[in-house]
Image 1: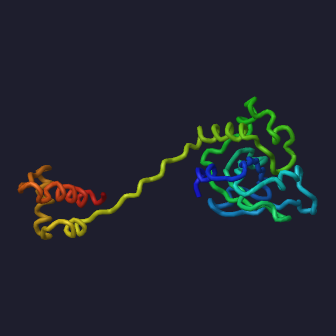
Image 2 (image 1 turned 90 degrees about the vertical axis):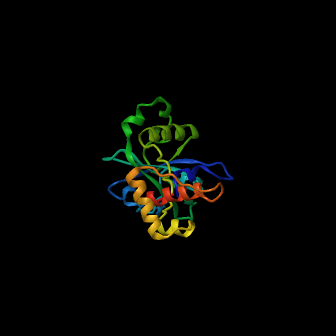
Length: 211
C-alpha cells in the first residue's frame, strides 16, 4: 500500500489523527511497512486512555501521523486506521516510515499549529487533527521526504527474442551485431515493406537488452 492510497476513495469524511508512541514501550520503527498493529483503548491498569472519545471516533481509512515521544520527539511515520474499535483495540497499518523525521521543535514553531490538540494538552496518545493541521504537517513532511516516482518496469529483450521475431539465423545476427558495434552504423537494404524498420528496432532492443 502506498501513502497515495490513503487519500483516495472514502464514503465518510476522513478524519486525521496524531498518535504518540512511548519509545520505552513501543516504537513505530519496530513496525514493518504494511504491518497491522493494534492499540488498546485501556492502559495497563484497565483505565480508559485519555481523550477516550477519540478512540471511539477513529474509523477505517482515517490517516494517522505517527509521533514518538521523549527522548525521540519526532514524527517518524504515517499510518492508516484499518479497523475501528472492537471494544478493546483500534487497529492501524504503517504506510510509510520517514527517512527524515520531523522534529517537535520545528512543528512547535509554527503558529498554524498552536491550537493543535496535542500542543494544547499533550497528555494522552491519540489526538485529533483538523484537515488544515494535517495538510500543513504533510507539507512539512514532504519538504523533507518527497514521494519518489514509481520505478518504470523494464521489459527484458534478448537475442532469442529478436530471432523469434525476425527471420534471420544466429550466425547472421552475430555478424550484424558485430558490424554495428564496430562501425556504429549499418544500412539495411530492401524493398519497401519488407520489415527493415521493424528489424532495426528489434535489433536495438536486443543489443540494449531491454525494450
